Amino acid sequence: MAAPHPFSTQLIAWQKVAGRHDLPWQKTRDPYRIWLSEIMLQQTQVATVIPYYLRFLASFPDVGALAAAPIEAVIAHWAGLGYYARARNLHRCAGQIVAVYGKKWPESEELLAELPGIGRSTAAAIAAFAFGRRAAILDGNVKRVLCRHFGVAGLPGTAAVHRQLWTLAESLLPAHGIEAYTQGLMDLGATLCTRSRPRCADCPVAAGCLAKRDSRQGELPERRPKAAVPRRRASFVLISDGRRLLLERRPPLGLWGGLLVPPEGEPAAVAARCGLALGEAQALPPLEHAFTHFRLTLEPVLCRVDGQTLAAEPGLEWVDLATAAEAGVPAPIGKLIRQVASAAD
Figure 1 (cartoon, one colour):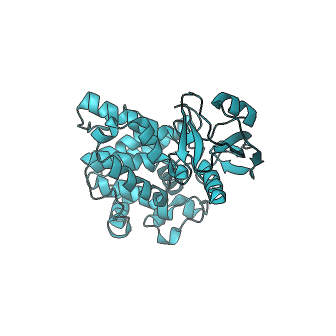
Figure 2 (figure 1 turned 90 degrees about the vertical axis):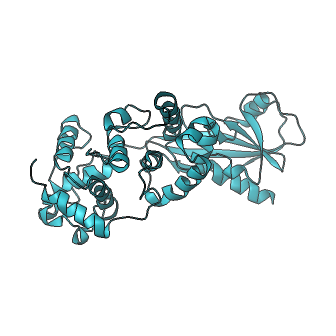
Figure 3 (figure 1 turned 180 degrees about the vertical axis):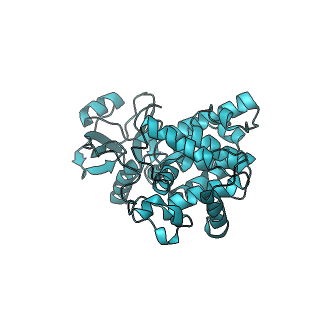
């Protein structure tokens, strides 16, 4: 076997001394806990993930409990974390682990990558942390580290550069210490080699970094030119009797799939569908919310009703107004509900 690369040995030594060691999903070989953290950490920062992770584990302590839970309960625990396809895939994956593997996780990154919601890099992270396997990760942070350190030009999203980065990532794998090396890559990208204002003076591998040598930290990795962000508008009718709020469960796929939201549409159309005679309508201030690929303007209307029977429309339910903001609703909807609840006090 070839001699270890200085990048790998220096990174391992740094991680053992200065890396992160007290995250709630560390110091375990439990693939369930490692998998859950890796899925939650996709597109989401550690500080945001920690409270969700702890609450999730309290309700679903193992893969069997998660597989047995209704998807609505899983979505409710995910509400506010975003990218809700992750929660649906999490539930599907748990079911597959139970049905196909009898709750015993496969150890190879190849089999792990075949499970719902687990790509090649996530599979490698699980295999490394849970089973000590030599497998390369390549998430967004790692791509940035490798592009800068080794001077990789071109857009990382293109096929040629993507293959180049995978080849490079696999060539750097150490013979020993895969867990510290993998965690070190994550720590370096998250805490030092950040997208803006990288802390090169504290970097353990700065001496060999081509981007630092050539003052190209701001240029690498190359970024795709920003396209204009599309804008959309949606009207939501917040129907309340003063104690309760009418919510509707979204279809499982699409925007906010599986979460509870106020009925969407114009007040008259919503009233007809719900079989309710609405009182005076009060337009609330619009609310802007940014998604990855578009911006949404929510146009809420508050309507009051008195003691009416709800039509037997699937998915509609009355929720206590005082707790509705925590009832498995998206983050911007929670803001609207808290405004209404505050006004009703």
